[in-house]
Image (spheres, rainbow, N blue to C red):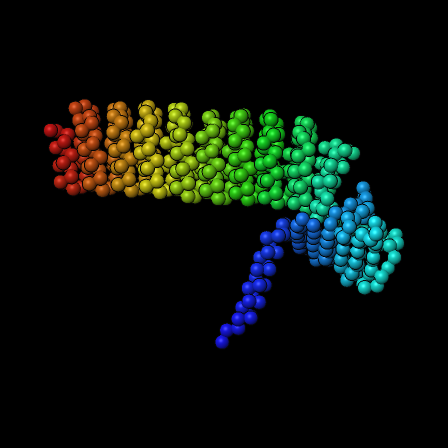
Length: 457
């Protein structure tokens, strides 16, 4: 028999849990650092709402939690509590190597009441205790990020942007570093020297791919004003391991549009280490759509495309080169690149798209026929060559096409192709002679007869 009261209780607890989740803004980070001799695991979490701030940090040697209620102000050097709003308090619990310290500070009649204990025994706030408190508050600021905006503003007034950047280099948490960066940017434009330093720090000091990408994307809006800044930006992008986050950061750069040839080449090369076929193809497509690629850029583009495993994504990336009325060199480059596609269907589709969409000079026609020879399927090979023949190719191309017909093993497919050649240029004696020689390679008497009849009609 069901218990109605138990159901109500369970429902109430579920609703309470949901309301707590909705009311609390929580940021959690887990970092793993390893050396050759040992490993250390760290976990830091920050949760906050309109009146409470909680920070919890633990690793292999310590467990530290700090809870702040109300508005709390610390001394300028963050060694002690300066003021607490009415009803507010600060609570610290620190367990390190088996020694448990606690500290509490609360507002009482306009003053601050402090309490300190070690392993449950009340103690005086002597020199050792104050040194410990200063270290914990420093961690609260530098690891937990408490009072970050106010602290950045203080540093800016005292030491300027360079002081904030120096402070960022001393911070340990990627999350906190980005808070400091965000507040620094919010205060106004950085000059060229400080902007360069900020870009450099973003690439070297932040290990989290997400935090690094977030910061770089934000900086791309205002600070990529010259080639030097863009080069530093790309160097930072290249330190991002996540294909998705690297793609986001590079996409933000590409939106700027005014990249030098060296920057474009650098961006193309940075895609080569991306493991995701989709993410790499997406970026290459954006590059091809936005910029004209010179010879070195085309070579780098081809190298990046060639290492894409997915034929579909490879085809998409190569097709992107055809979207902006490509120059002859780019078109020739794309035709040759189709040979790296292993799927006969995908390769034939791309070649047919080229044949149907663009005028092909003699060099492009020869490259086209050469690319077709790498197609294994007789049917797809015939489709691709037929698309070329529909363009009314020159005599030299017809000869190369007839020569490539010998690689078609299917009598039917070979005959179909030779019939198209015969209908195009059977009146030319040299072409007719080549057709006869090609027809001799057809085993089926019926199919051979069909071709010869078309030649001598």
